[in-house]
Image 1 (cartoon, rainbow, N blue to C red):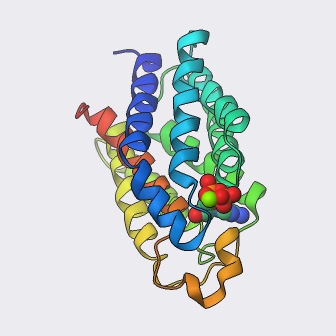
Image 2 (cartoon, rainbow, N blue to C red):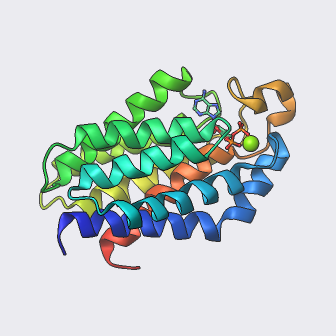
Length: 211
Ligand code: ADP
Ligand code: MG
């Protein structure tokens, strides 16, 4: 499988995960937001697949750029521009047509930089960053291990993101709609941190060949 095909498979698996988890993400967002996160993510990734079908990308960077444009163009709310920026930065970071473990970790780090710059949140604010920040740390470490693979980098990132998403439960939100709730957001898992975990898990599965 070449790299364009592998990257496309990752996006297809992400789109499927957003479809499968639409109700779950919407439920989480209805507890501490406005209940649209599941629909936003599903719509964005459906648009990404459509765009990929229309554009025939010629490199992994092109695939990620098409996804970024779809997310920025089709998803309103906070998450569309944040994830769109993440994919755009990841695309820019991937200069090699041949993506190795270090490239993958570098792309994730660039994505994190984009979310930080755009959203101006910090770890502990109950956002995407609570999952993505530890994910990038884990990805960088996995990329330097003996026999590192791109699949192992994403698996490590996904596991760290899951713990990170879980860590948002007791937090008060300091960014986004949930911040209007004050202490009432405590006891609820952040939808965006949860979708970050689901997307990284989907990437790992696609690369592990688990479909
Ligand atoms: P909206 O809040 O506009 O309805 P979504 O429901 O799609 O948009 O996305 C909500 C998620 O966006 C939150 O759960 C949170 O994780 C994430 N989020 C909101 N603001 C920020 C921010 N400044 N930085 C990072 N993530 C954020
Ligand atoms: Mg919402």
